[in-house]
Image: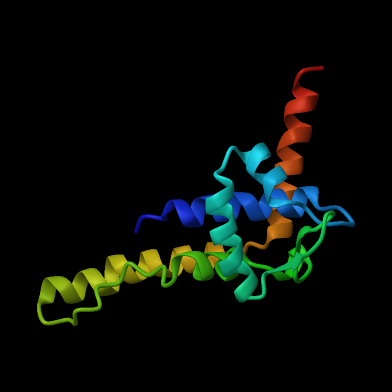
Length: 143
């Protein structure tokens, strides 16, 4: 399984949005600058996220985007499914051979369950807390 730039950039942008929107909204141009991402590409990504109900677009001069739900209610699975589709590495071609059957049960299915557990068990809020904890750790180590 390879996660595309759409998935990687989209996840970075949503984490940035959650970190920097505060009580208001964040513009795509500010996210683009902070994350060094193409503004045009972000517009495409956020259009998908908006259609899926993960973000809300606010029109106007002071507009931008906000999360549609609290960060603790948005899982990485919610995000990656919108941006990447099915995340499975499972061999859908059937189990016609013993080797294929073995790999499906003992390798691909195990990988799928592990990836699913991480993505469904991790919310945007979890990511924000982990990033904050790492920053505190780095800041304190310099004392």
